[in-house]
Length: 281
Image (cartoon, rainbow, N blue to C red):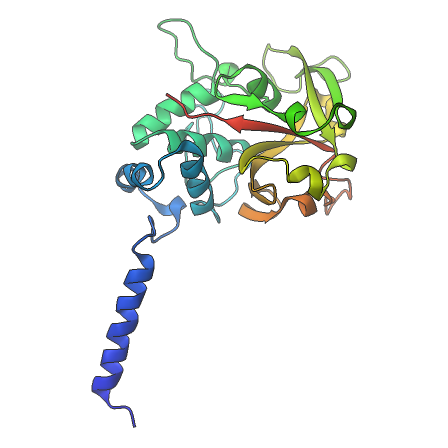
């Protein structure tokens, strides 16, 4: 019969083994519950453990699995959308990509916030606050085409015969009105890979980490190209803030592209655009 001393020794051993198993973990509670002070302690450790930007970006994205979804997760701190412009407690698809990039580039919470301004807003004139709803880069397609921190690689992955081109005016709907209530529209042209060409063979060409924009052709009439976005790891795992799951999840990317909306039964994906993300400095 096992006596109390033996049980105590077993429990001590289990506790010791658990500590060994956890010693390489950078966080021991959900990322979305971390305070600003805890983030300040954590970010330098990411830099110590992961030398390159993509490794830090991957680690942070995976550490943020389970983060609650909120369609309007971030705002501009005042004005039209007074919510904070940088948050880790909730996220949406675009905020997930941008806040990950800001965090992976920085060593303090405040620095990450300043980087978010560079990623999510257009440059502003001197003595003008760039963090305004009217100055926010609302359309992913425009961000990918103009920001120095993104590099489109769609035409490097697919052959010319596997590419379609979409040319439209962002924010202009079919009736000529603006989709968003801002005095802004822009004509753009961008490559995308139609869903019929998305195969396991093509996805093997993807880099170990890249961003992906999900195309829905029905949104073209609203002046929108990219309906959703996230991060693809090893051409297989899709890490993204899912509206359906109401949290950040990881799932098979190819299977995701075959899904249909549970309410409308329309495809969630008609094609994709691919991009690299660069460290902010």
